Image (cartoon, rainbow, N blue to C red; front, side, top):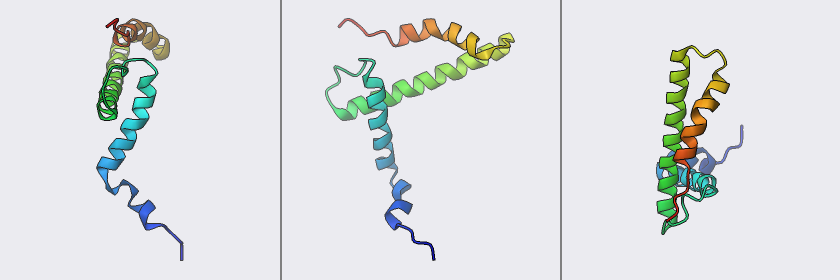
Length: 96
């Protein structure tokens, strides 16, 4: 018989742990932007990083849709041209 580990099988059975691990990874990613600096806890940083990630994904989806509607042949260059200005605004670190 195949040898398996029950803990490994049930690893994703706890959605809270899965979400916390995902938030930790995203906090490391978004922490490099400086946008999480003044947050007072790891929980808040994780939550904010998940929101930032969701916003970035939504923005990319909308830009892709706009590019396809406008008939751009080279979607990648059209996306970078349209997104560059938007990302600079979204990711600009406030001077507070």
